[in-house]
Length: 383
Image 1 (tube, rainbow, N blue to C red):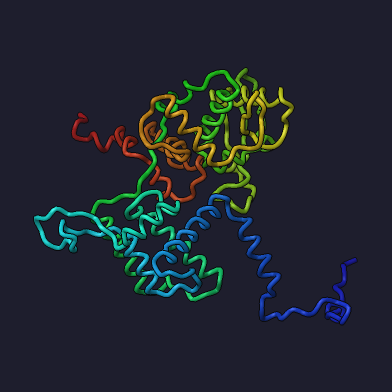
Image 2 (tube, rainbow, N blue to C red; image 1 turned 135 degrees about the vertical axis):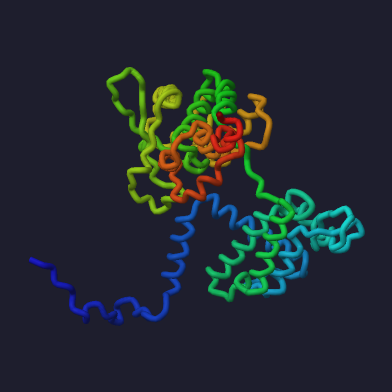
């Protein structure tokens, strides 16, 4: 028998029930709940970067205008922020570099005393204009803050948009490129793995590096949030051990929708390293929860690794291996894609492992060395 809906009169509040909501207006409690869900749905890294950007806005505004920051921020203030933080050409005399034959230097409009105060109080790491990506990110965060506060957005003003667009173009014309971390391709990765001995820390780091790299170049947040429950051993006829890891949450699948492409294989040396690490976990009675954990004194395993700890492990192993260059946790992801290009792996197969949906995006991870094996670059020498 079908269930009959309750009569409308039963849904209308009586004095004993809660007051009725205005259907044309979102109730404050619902709005607060919606914002809480939005915050929970964002990654910890996103929340941290948003908080850092807004703290910087507040500090810069207080130093520049002598008063606390309030929303909405006027358009002239946003324009001032851009010119304070965007490097522009200037000649040796400090004037705009329009003439030829002069040595060109880069300057910004941020007063030296304000710049020094921001550095001294920890809001900046160094004096001078930040990277263009940093400026663009802080603009995006301010825009998001106005959107959430339902205030008029100064970042959408035509003057602001044009200035930011021309600033991007000026950087490009000077040949400025966003700084990218070096790729940990197969050879430097092997050097890192050689530093991982048979101690508990060595086994953990070897399993972590190979898990992150071999499953398609996992992001540091995905490595830190990896759990035993999502790792499954595959019983094969051969003597070799294999695993399948199900990626339940990622940058491209933040809703946690179950998808076949989120099941990543772990085979060969990566599987053997994982088997050795799982043995250590089992001996300590750990059968569920975080896959990679902090190692305390005495060989005790503690809480799950933070995403920043994954970065620190990569940097530490690079230093131990004597691998020079600027590396980070993202170097594992870049290294996987670059190595795939060097070994002429198909783009669809590479994207299936990394989880990219955009060809343009995954192509951006290729580093220059992946083009050295290109047949097109050797057409002049081919007979």
